[in-house]
Image (cartoon, rainbow, N blue to C red; front, side, top):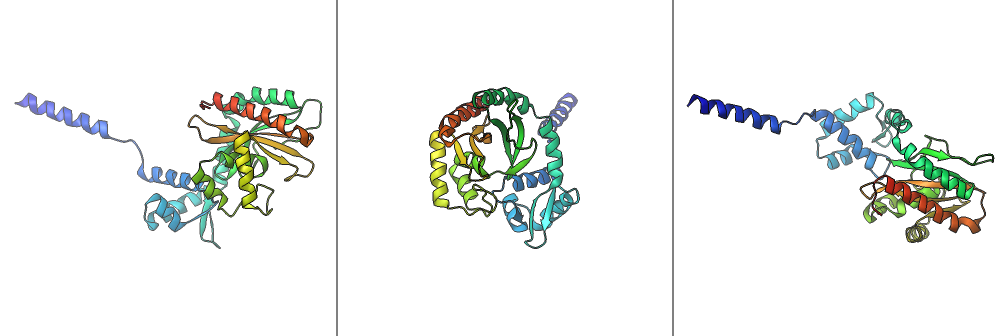
Length: 270
């Protein structure tokens, strides 16, 4: 009888250990809140919107937001009463980017693209509403046009913006196009949504997007999306140069091939 009781106690302890989850609930909720802000199609959210998406009370959300604000992970716009990610995230993210293995992975492909085109090639990734340049390959012995490594632009900016948004899932793309900040033709430039949608459809059909001097006069750009192992848009390869518009098609095809090679190296199935 005593042995049976002892076995039952041991079994109960084993069950308790197997169901134990070593997490801190408040920290888990705070990280989910940061992810919510990062994945939002707009750059900021109200307290009510955050609570609805996270299914938490306003008092709990406010406490978490205020704590994150103290560490510069988020900021509050007192005028619009909205919250957005802030510089604390950037500082931590920069350290990650500087040590990112993806840089080493994509560098040979970018170098080959530069040899083929004699233009400057860049690799950037999407994080929140930003497009971060994590690697580039310059033209040797010639004046090249580059985007600063570890610098960033809005993810809808120019050619890379078209390439990224064109290959988003339909619902996600619709949210982006309904947003207030659209930089496809330059910061603050008006966007004809009907015309843009035609461009996005064409981009998806041919595999690359183009910016023939629209964002920066005299500087042409072509870009193609890079996908991760889950098949989602991860970033883009961007080629910059003063090449004639007649070469956009051939360069666009080379950029697309490079982006596909990097995607496969990242585990994507194309």
